[in-house]
Image (cartoon, rainbow, N blue to C red; front, side):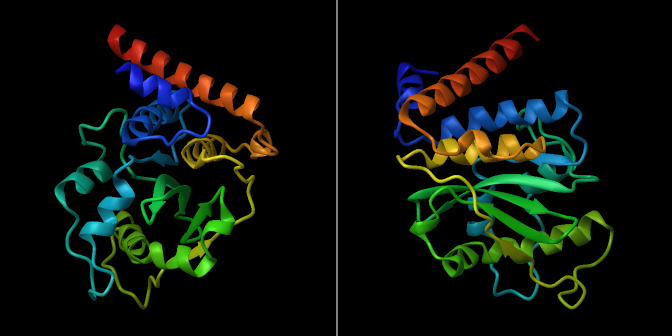
Length: 224
């Protein structure tokens, strides 16, 4: 990782890039395994856009899962610390809307709904969020059927609902940081109180701790 990676990681208000998401999500996937969170799956930065670009919500049924996604579901993907989706209840992924804003999404397989954690609610209306997740609403219904060994039928498995609960809001351009922290806290059952009334000095600390976690996970990988 180059110096630019770390300077952007530590710059309050700085826009995080794909590599930042990749590295921190890898750290979170390792935590899922280390803490034996058997019903939790954390995906990748490209996961949401992959569904957007490869799945046509106008089709009666989605095409067969492409190879990368199929391997991800089976837990055989080359992605670091990936695990099988068997028994999954909560699946997390970052979602980008209009290439300008990041938010966290929890796919809830118990309630058949997508829960959106958005740190900038004033940016988009609820209807806009739902439209941006239209492919996902059908795709996850399909996946739920596959995981339960049944053929997808829209009469049995309608479009998933979308919820957008009230969560702490950003005051700087730190949506990427909020997105990853929402995933990290929710996956272990914690609330978001530590993200409330975020100040610049506290955001610096959050970013520093995230950078430390990435370094620690990378060092452990080298020592294996």
